[in-house]
Image 1 (cartoon, helix red, strand yellow):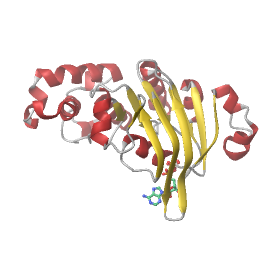
Image 2 (image 1 turned 60 degrees about the horizontal axis):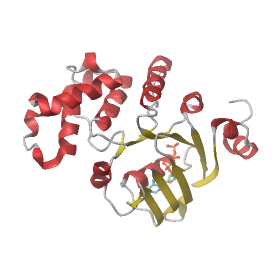
Image 3 (image 1 turned 120 degrees about the vertical axis):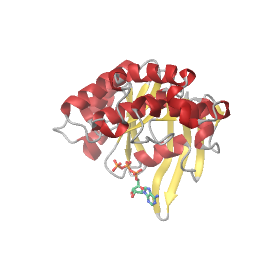
Length: 246
Ligand SMILES: Nc1ncnc2c1ncn2[C@@H]1O[C@H](COP(=O)(O)OP(=O)(O)OP(=O)(O)O)[C@@H](O)[C@H]1O
């Protein structure tokens, strides 16, 4: 469903993405791991269309989307969990998701102030909130949600745009154990229904959820494999995981 070919990006003298070739099949959860500064966020930004690569290509459903801007990729079904539409803190969770539906629908809904009352928007918005477990919190302003609920809201906003593939950049960052466990459950529920690319530092979560794992070090892929293959790969252990962590 998503493929990169020889993707290359440099910032001055620093090569942030070094000839990265990946292939992610429909329905898979593919995790990208690697130490700080390995280039994971830079890679996601190129997949989402926020950053233009200096070389190589991004293909979505076999179509070359390398030159397509964010909104066009989102319309094609490739959604980043946040930054497609940002959260408005004073608005309720429901209104935020309704606005995400509206932003995706484009010109057919012109009056954004009415988003929270328009059933064509709130229907799909409620469904997305229910799916992430935020249904009972629909009428709470986003600024009063806990950190974990806010991340759930961002995923609901991405889901409300009807994507086929989700790009998730560290959804567990800053979460305590209980919130983290809730996010793992949510991702487990979404897995299979959506193709997911997950960047995450929480190795327990990654090894519990991923079908495939790619390890990035200094912008380059050093290994791609199943969790078992990655766990036992000597180069990965040396470069990143450490003997005692897994
Ligand atoms: N806009 C930019 N200008 C210059 N250098 C950048 C820019 N964005 C990222 N970098 C550099 O590119 C490298 C890769 O950064 P990136 O944020 O993609 O890594 P990461 O794997 O996501 O790290 P982390 O796990 O800490 O989030 C880093 O050395 C970073 O300093």
